[in-house]
Image (cartoon, helix red, strand yellow):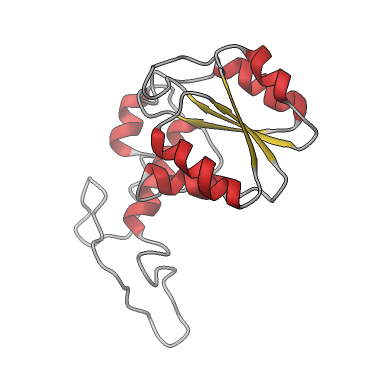
Length: 186
C-alpha cells in the first residue's frame, strides 16, 4: 500500500471490483432506506440503510486504509461517535480526559456518563504527569482532544499512547481540527 495519502483519499483502497452496472470510477451514493432481496431469507448483506449501507461501508473501508487500521465505524455526527465510545465502559470505570474539551463532550461526560457511574477526571493533558497523578486501578481509558477545542492545546499523542499501553488503557482521540495527513503518530 502506498504511503501517499492523496490517491487513497480519492480512490480509497483502489478496489474497483464492486458490482455496479455503470462501472463508475467514483463509488456511487446509495440513498435508499431499504434494499431488495434475492429471495426469502436471501439477503445481499444490505437490509436497512441505518444498519448497513454500501456507501458508508466504502467510506469505512477507505478510512481504515488511510489509517492503516483494522476496522472503522462511521457515525452521523461526532457526538454520536463520542457517545458510542463511552458506552464501552461500565459503572466504576475511570476515564482520564483532557480538561479542554468541546462543550458537548464535557456536558455528556458530566451528565450521562456520570449517571452511568463512570468516574471522569479532567486534567491538563499537555503534561503527562497530570494524567499519571490521577491514574487508579479503575482507569480504563485516556480521552484526548488535540488540538483541543476551543483553546487549541496540543497533547503529545505518542506519549499518551505509551502511557495507555503501559497501563493497558484504551486511547481515544478526538481530532476535530487536524486532517489525517497532518496528525499521524507513525
